[in-house]
Length: 273
Ligand code: DGL
Image 1: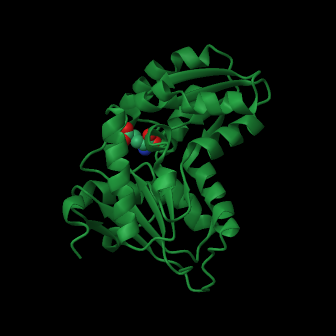
Image 2: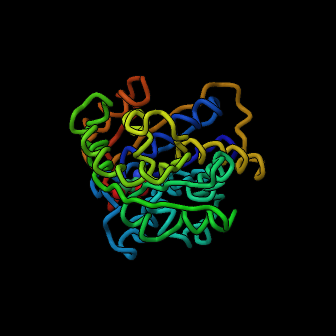
């Protein structure tokens, strides 16, 4: 069981922010990633649809025998809140670990939250922050176009389109004197440099993918699930749409070629084999 892979899923490329960190922290673990690229974005869909997609994504990972599941998706973590109770393996989403990190990072108690529309409407991060400390001032902004930028490889901080969209969404937050900003969608750390540049490098950015990977290490430890093998672990990536775009952006973001590790999977046929 301990040699089984850690399963990570997201609607698309965003969950790679968790994979990148996890592989750094636990190089001997095997990882299976599923990006639902045929159905991205999730963030502007109904609660019912997001829950159904999340259950199917988790089922696919379970069919591959994973020992733990990480929903590396702010939207799923905010909306499919009962998923945890339905799974036979340990599970974490991104909201609680990310809010916890932000609560510890802020000095002035003024925290911004950006995410998809579904995430912001759910109030998930805000509620978690206020649960940790009622005196926080929390400012939210949904930034749905960030997901499309990332999925279409518009990720350079020097790209005029990226700069324009960042300014449009973050102008209001910049005026609120926040000292900490939660990147509450796992796609957003991929354009973190552009976000930081716009905020003049003065705001601490909390990366939901990274914080969740850090928490996943604790969860593995708690459940005695560390892979004791000393061999380097493997990564397998599955996407529900074509592999080419995923390969290109994944390579830029992870800094290495993922060519042969990526396969297409049709979720409807995923359980046939
Ligand atoms: N990466 C996702 C999130 O963290 C999903 C974005 C989307 O599909 O809209 O919310």
